[in-house]
Image 1: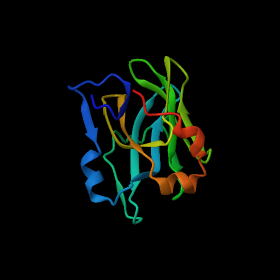
Image 2: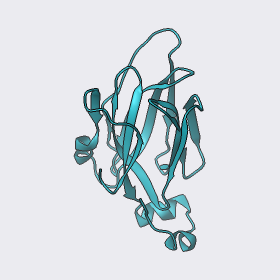
Image 3: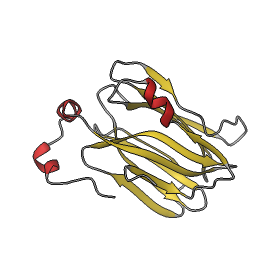
Length: 172
């Protein structure tokens, strides 16, 4: 486990794995998430697919954790503006990830799934999340994001009060 990561659920090596980290080398730093597609039922999260944006505007799509088109399966597409990024990842998990939500620094958010299981919330001042990895079988059971600091330009563009945030530091 890396120090700059957040972990949701239980990683299972014998299940289907995905990892977007290698694709990050194809983008200019800093990298942000530009879109998240969540596949879910009313009970659980089935899959996630993330689109990343580099500083130069180039985008790439990460590996998909699942894609089924069957009755009772819903899809939610959450687009994130160019000058915004993920501030918080939250939801509920048990043996699978049951609910998954994302909130940006500008206050936009999406929540999918069911509030069952243990609650989780990850929010680290002056940081954002990139390079998802995880494991799935029938459902999304494990999800990890790498945590990176915001650049000074991003902090300024987001209008974050740096005096308050200077007192807080990244803690795992």
